[in-house]
Every structure is written in C-alpha cells, then in structure tokens.
Image (cartoon, rainbow over all chains, first blue to last red):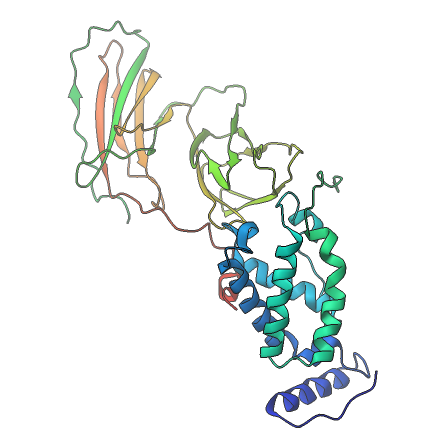
Length: 156
Length: 219
C-alpha cells in the first residue's frame, strides 16, 4: 500500500517507532493496520471510551445491561487486533453466539459504529485507517443485529 | 475474622408437646446479626461425629433468571450434582475459581449442560463472565443435615440421629463458616434451639474476580 507523506507529530513518531518495531521483529515489511492505528495502546483506548459511551446511552445500551464492560473491552480489542493484523488470536466467545437473542437493532449497531468512528478520530487514527477498520468490522452486522440462533454444536 | 469472636449460643429447651421419634431429633437454629436482627438466607449445617450415612447423590438446581442466579445462596451435601438450566434466552458463562470446585460452563439458550458434581466440601463462589451483576454462593457440606434460614432468621433441621454434632452457621460475605457449636443429641430429647450471632456479611456488588484480570479493568 502507498505510504502518504505525513506531518511529523508525536503520534506519527510513535507510529514510526512501532513500524520500526514491526520491521525489526521481522513480522512484515509493511506495518499492519493495527500497528498503523497505534497498536494496543491506542486501540484499547478508543475501544474503552466507545464501550463506555454506548453503555451510557439509553438508546444504545439495551444489550449492555448488567454486562461486564471490562470484558467486552478486552475481547473487542483482541478481536480488532486479530482482524487488523496485530498478531492476536481472538479466544473469546464467537461473535454470533454472544449476541444471540439480545435483540440488537440495526440502529443500535450503527449507533455504536458512529461512536467508534468519532473516538478513532479523537485518538488520531487516520481517515484511511478508520475506513479500513470499519470495512473489516462491517461484515459483523449479521452476526450482531437481531441474531436468533440455537446453541452451537457441542465440541466435546 | 468475619464472624463474631464467639458465636453466642443460647440453648432454650422448649416444652414441646409434639411427639418425637426416639432415634431422631429436631433442632431449631436461629441466626441473628450482632444487633439481634434475624439474618435471612444464612446457611446452617450440623456435622455428626459419626460417619454420615451414604445416600444416593441428589441433584440441586441453580437457575439463571433475568441475569441473576436463583437462588443466590445454596447449600448441598458433598457429592451432590447441580444443574444450571439457564431460564434466560441469552448466553451465560458461569464460572468458579474457588478451590472447592473450579469450572467454566457456557449456558446456551435451548441446550442443557450436564450437571456438575461437587465432590469437595467448601464455599464455592460463582459468577458469570458476561454479566458481572451475577453472583451466587454454594456451600458444599459434609452432612445431610443442613438448611437456609427464612425471613425470621430461623431454620429447623429434622431427623438428626443420636450422637454428637458440630453445628455451624454461615452468611454471605464470610470467608468461612462460624466456629462449631458442639451439640449432643440424646435419645428422647425434646426439640432444641440454638442461636448464632454473626457479623452480617455485605453483599458484594460484582461477581468473583477472575485471577489476573482485575488489572485490566477500565483500560
């Protein structure tokens, strides 16, 4: 992918350092989207604020009642890390299973996405990186919105 | 120590007109807090000195209803199976890290999981990995003589055989049960009453903390 010239800011330096780290570790010649966004430090931060705001919004928080938000943040960060090439292996409950019968509407799903976009911007994630992540998350919609599924087959 | 230093125990011998079986006695136990208020849902159990007669394993039920355990406070004999039926139509992931029994059990709507056997005595604290408002306690006791107090703080244990017993009381928030009240049951004795005074436990706000995870909260 082409690398655009960027103004050198503190964050850009950080990004450059993590890019360097990625190349030093020999993972890839190009930094992953996860690294571009700032790695776990930045992703965990915008995920945390996003979840807190959704859970506090009466129009959006119906499915978050009594939910352990710390766990949601950890799992979502890990999921994004896996999706965005950060080298994580998501070990949480499959997305479709954990949303079953929660009655999440499309408006609630996109309400979360709106907050996520804003928080990524506020955490200095570039427009290109924001769009890349949203494109990776978009296919989750059918596994989150109005999911009615039976139990998965037993694995043991 | 969460329990009162000395469980104050008054033994009042009530004149009873009820016929009693010569080989079995009835024991009424009251559990009060330090201010004398009755404690509801306290667990009491009487452990006989003689070996406990073996019985067919029983099955108890701890349900999940409206994102709560029902009941929240439970007591079973060692060897009992516990079913977690999940009456909610959403996923719960019940877990325990208590030494008496460690497990994680995913409870999907519409699927019954095999019951869990509790084979060691102790206090099992359970939570849900998804819903941190959920918490339940299960006392696994080495005796068939146990009960939970009602709103008046009392419970009656029946059919105690002749012998020596160590009677304990426990309330939510106590790390372990009270010191024993030693009680002989003799043939033909009238019903007896003992009273425990406990420092009442406070209900924790959230489920048990998962080891190594607390540091990541609020990241």
